[in-house]
Length: 375
Ligand code: GMT
Image (cartoon, rainbow, N blue to C red; front, side, top):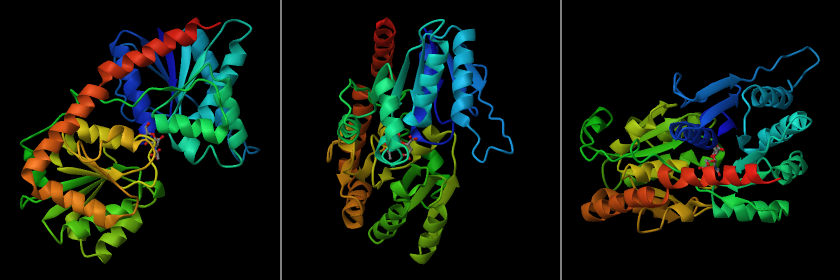
């Protein structure tokens, strides 16, 4: 098939899922056209059957807000026509879904161009429910030829909040278990922990919803029981406050802020535990990537996380903001060798058996065929 994919090309779960999906589809023989405002971060050039089309947004003195959605819709229609795309698959409803709808209407006199919207979380739980975006988000979901959600929790939430009754298929996020895999030696950990301390890791866009300050509090608490260091990968608004808190709690020498990272598959396997203390998480892709690396996650019992992490089996989930409980789980994993080994193996097993690319990508392919076959 010939598929157009649109996503946020920056650091963030939805863009990563969209990019990895495109790569996997191309690997399986499909032609994939990324239509985005810059090159998606995990997309290298020169990959067979992958094309990249940049959306250029022209500014004009009248435009206080350049109309990106219109530029995107025009580019989608142009690419779809030139390359005879079978469908558009947009990730994150706002504004991609409405742009796809416009592109579809532009081509309607000539031919059908179905589009699928994949909901990722904050497009529904935060931004979509904002009064100014609610009606258009609801409309674009209803107008989509296909809708998928990355967890059952998000599917239910969408139905409840938007009162939408149309089909919304759950297709879970996935991980490439050949790329993300355990490194039992953890030789590379020495550069971060020269004295052999165990490593905790956190990966996110450092937005308030991620509660990155809790990671610092957890490290401080854990260190009262056992030596540990914390790798903070990513960047965003709460990085400064987290750095300040680390100094305040006297742990700044034990926290390393690494900034945005392109190859987290090399970093995660060096750690013993992944921290994901989020306020909300519709899935928790970082936790899945860690599980594939045999790194048990300690997360919060929110959104779709319990669909991924089975508490006490392949990771732990505790209440949001409960630093004591989350720290106790981390200490348990760092100090009880047999519990750690058991849980690390279970985490890897969950990733391989339930969320590997080979079982999830065919679900997207089947859905594409269904949507294209509909009149
Ligand atoms: O979490 C974010 O702020 C980024 C956001 C995104 O769209 O990039 O992540 C959402 O999509 C990810 C990929 O499907 C999910 O793993 C995250 O759980 C989800 N984030 C939230 O629901 C807060």
